[in-house]
Amino acid sequence: MRRVPLAFAFLAFLALTGCGPTFVLHQPATREEMLAGASLVVVGVIEEHKLESWPYFRVQVPPGPDAHIWQVLRRRVRVETVLSGPLPPGPTIDIYEVRWTAGVSGDWNATHDGDRAVFPLRQEHGYYRVAGDWWRSIFPVTTGPHARLPLDDSYPLWERIALMNWWIPRSDAHLRINSPSSPYHDPAGVLTRWRTVKLLRGLLRHPSPGVRVPACRELLSLNWGQDECWDVLTSQERAQLREHGTHCCTAEEVAADRQKWEKRSAAAWWRKSDRDTNRLLTAISHPSLRREFCRLFQIEYPGDIDNGCPPGLPPPATIVTQQGDVPLLGPWPP
Image 1: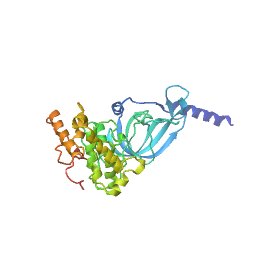
Image 2: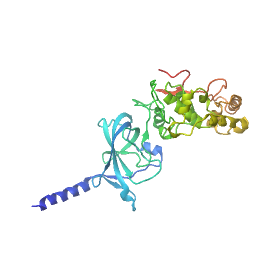
Image 3: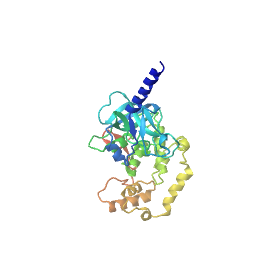
Image 4: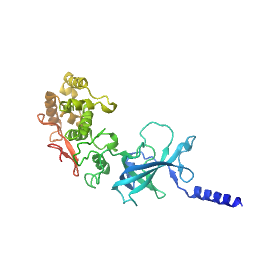
């Protein structure tokens, strides 16, 4: 009598191992390849992580002694916004990834419950899969939630995603941002340094110190003379610059960085064939050098008005709206 249940169990095991999906390790070479292979891109909040066990979920990886270390991870994600592709079947979806489960260093998909992120997804065997296994293919979103992206469909999706992370559509006196220009916020590196600096200067006008102070910290950390924010911070805000274990910035460090500009002429600092860096030079805090850099810029790039000139005015600042990053000419809008 015991053989019947055992037989059924064996048949069930065979059915399970024979019918379950085998996920193939997939790691696209570039961000563009990642996006090109994605049938759905969403912003969502992770509700749960779970390692799925063999035999139902199996993996296909390069053979070797460490092949058994790869497992299938399931993330349950509450979808907030669909950025590209058809609407998913429900408000919550399961997203699967072939994941290395041993120790490792590098830029991998480290996520936690409660994280908000951009998920480029593809489908495999009817399941949602991350666009790239293990190495970074899930990109944190530290602002939001966002009901839509800036700009319209005529602009590249990576650019719209990058600007979304700078979009603060309301005045929140308690908002805190730890790293405004994190590379994760611009996954494909579409924003130039000059464009990012203008966005940081826009954040300096936000009503919350939790936004202004991190923005100033990043401008000071550039060590490219974009440091006028030091003079407008209160002593209490200056003390917050060194929060979270950062090594920026003391009054002595700011003074030393400013003094270095005195040791070389404007011509020595000028960068031939590097327009983006030369834009930064036209916005430095050193008045006489800034005047000379503006003169050099107008000679080398006649007709280019995207710079920090004229030198008597505050350097340009931008803010992200539905129309993209636009000039911020006054205080932060309500």
